[in-house]
Length: 159
Image 1 (cartoon, rainbow, N blue to C red):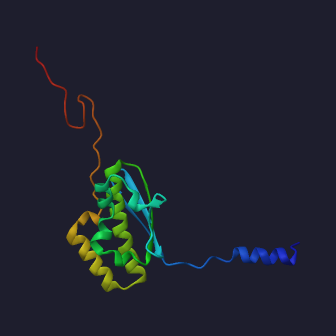
Image 2 (image 1 turned 180 degrees about the vertical axis):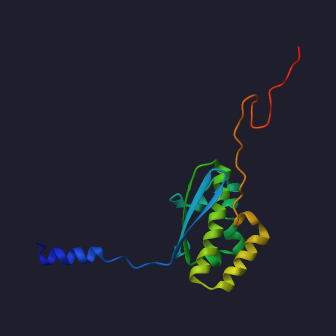
Image 3 (image 1 turned 60 degrees about the vertical axis):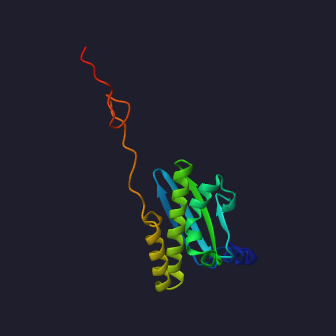
């Protein structure tokens, strides 16, 4: 049924691509979820397709790249990070991004470098701020009837 050339083309198409060293991690804050795809590369950090330096406002940009500043640019020089983030507000998204970046470099070092340097990274991050590696479990409590919020009640009058 198959022509020889067509069959050869089919075989070439079916061979899987070379596996590059990569890890995928996520970070969460409230309803924001950030996913980081970390692979061996040349130090690119992209945030939703754009360079991370373009994040506005400046204070949130520094919050997002905190793990990079904390561990030093040298550790990220041979890694490419692609960050996708959805949900939540601006601040929650940045906290999710910083957590995802921190978890990504720890996972990458565990998988492709050595356990000792991974432990150093982890200790540095945890001593600075625990939320860099551990998610904050707090969520918004649903509103109930008889009041304007989850706990606040309407004012009561007797007369």
